[in-house]
Amino acid sequence: MMRLEMGTFPVRTLEFGPRTRWVDGALEVDRDGLLAEILADDRLTSAELEIVRPGDSVRIWPVRDVIEPRIKVDGPGMIYPGMVGRPVTTVGSGRTHRMSGIGVLEVSNVLWHSGGGDYLDLFIDMAGPWADVVPQASLLNLCLAVEPDRVLDIDEQNIAVHSAALLVSDRLAEAIRDQEPPELETYELTPAEGLPRVYYVQFLHSPQGKSQSLKTFHTSIYGISQLTPPWLLHPNEILDGAISGPYRTAFATTWSVANNPLLLELYRRHGTDFDFRGVLAFKTEWTMQHEKNLMAAQAAKMLRQIGTDGVIMSWDASGNEYLEVVNTLRECERLGIKVTLMTTEESPIGGVPTLLEPTPEADAIVSTGYRYSGLQGIGKVPPVAKVIGEAVRTVWRDPGGTVIRGQEQDMSGELDAPWRYDDHYGFNRLSVVAY
Image (cartoon, rainbow, N blue to C red; front, side):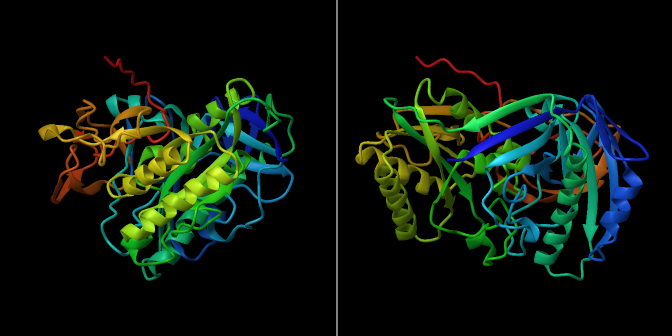
């Protein structure tokens, strides 16, 4: 049985100073020392560190990932295991320390793969209507703008950039390794006999098919981003970063997965409303229909074999990946496993269904809104006084998700919000009344 103690160190102020240390909520960061360590990697050509705070007239672009500083202080393994050569030892036991209220932003123009079709789109505003709906805009953010040597192949560029971001996260977390945390919580799935046995099925996009590569850099499970059969995980493994890596939206970053409110709510209600048994992580975007059908059937069979009464599902993508989701839902219901689906919705324009494949088995759905910022009514975002990262971007989709010809935009001016607003885990505060 896994038992994880999580010590939390709130960060209330963030400043640069002569050394890196945390004292009573004040985090001081040795910028010069960190930059020297980062640039010792000869795969990198430039690196800058800047601090941004909620309410600043700042836009950060392009954001590849947001990482919360965490560190293992007792027990096996290393935080964010498997990424960029880190050990793949199973995590989730012992003690972990984390800094809350802060994010390390990985800012770089490097694409995840060379296969095409995946564009860097995410920017974060620290003030204004886009900041109001993006959870990371409420953090104190340490932005690492870093670029690799473009002579390197795309995989090595990705490794270099993400290694630098993890290095920053690790060095910050070292400051709290040997301190006693102001807050300490224990995560353990103690026996809960007599309650419904519930699993969380977390669908995670894999770009393997689109990239035509097994080395694609993306949301990974123990460092593996390619398509694999479903993984059975203890939720503590996720709290220790077993699922991590960059993705296209603010709601699927490393920070988002580690702070997934759906996972944390399932843990809080364990032993009271149900017996929370674990997580089935399911990689999506298999390329053939029979593969999608097979993975769905195998996932449902596995859930039945381990004694599941109910399932809560979430997914982090769009389009054809929904076929794996809805097929798994059907198979579970066919086997007597009740399913609740958390999902974003597609555009209703033209009277089409907002779910790609409506099915009568999907009779318990929690909507987190439309996945297009234009349909959420976010509207234009105002100009900013400062841009961190790239001054210009090429836009490939409008706010409604329609593909358009590449248009260059000045990142300091008035813009449309990024077209994707797919809140995978329920961070937003939308509400709805059903009649």
